[in-house]
Image 1 (cartoon, one colour):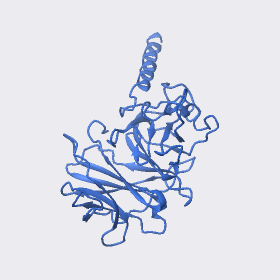
Image 2: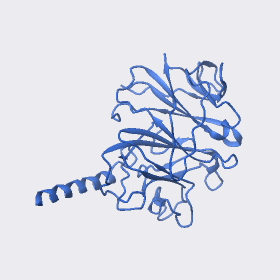
Image 3: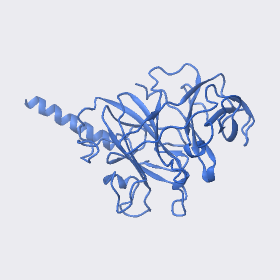
Amino acid sequence: MRSLLARLAVLGALAVSLSACGGGTGNSLPFAGGPNQAGGSPGTIQSGANGQALIRFIQGSPDVTSAANPNGTVDVCVDNLSLGVLGGSAKYGAAATSTANSGTLASIPGGIPHTVSVFVTQPGGAGTTPGSECATAPGPFFGSAPLAVTTISPGNNVRLTIVLAGTAATKTFGLYVFAEPSFIIAPAGSEVISHNAAPAFSAGKPGVGFGTCSTTVTPCVTAATLTGAGSVAPAKIATAAAAPTTTPVTSALAAIPAGFYDGIGVPAGVPVPITSVVAPTPPAGQPYIIDLYAIDGPAGGLNLVPITEQTLGYGF
């Protein structure tokens, strides 16, 4: 009995140590004590968790941008801890906990539900460091209610991307969740994963189309439509109680192009390009896999966020 208690004490100390580490390096561990979604001490062991899930977050809504918040920055909370302790803030058009949109991932316990809350980043000052709102999440923080809340229930050994997307004017503002490949075996060739996280732009259209560019200038000279991604429907909005997941479209690449574009989707033919980006630099020693996230732009426009996917060191 004494031996068992000693082992449990070691495990508990290890969990606390892990939750304090990471700091936005891609391995932060937002543990929260049971009952889940009701607070608890960081680092406590959660009943039912027997694996991990990897998540990333993207701020894809222009609605958050204002004079007081020109970058449209938000803080992301998983249960009562910041997503990426030192890098939990995400600017409009960028991924949280990422460096130059490298696609950094955060790890959370799989097999159990988690509450995800998004707040407008608080102004500077004592007690308002990134993620300070998480202490009261999903409730208000000094009177500031969260922008959006949902409950995710990831399985074990899965990847998710959560996007704050849409606009209030079109009644599409909220959280959207995508089920990403887990890369049990990394692809042998290059590929692009296309996500339609632009529900406001997609209203009344066939969807968003994705393709490659033969030049790096804007607007780019289109080269080809990404296979299967000529007209990608928008994801379904999440509710506070549940987050339906959308599977993005994966297209093989014969060669790395000069750039990528998104635009108005078409049932057949070439999408009408609107926004283009230079193709990210291939990662050293890894397959070339790019995530493309179409997000709503100001005044009904469309933007594109490219992220270099991580396949080695984050597989299951």
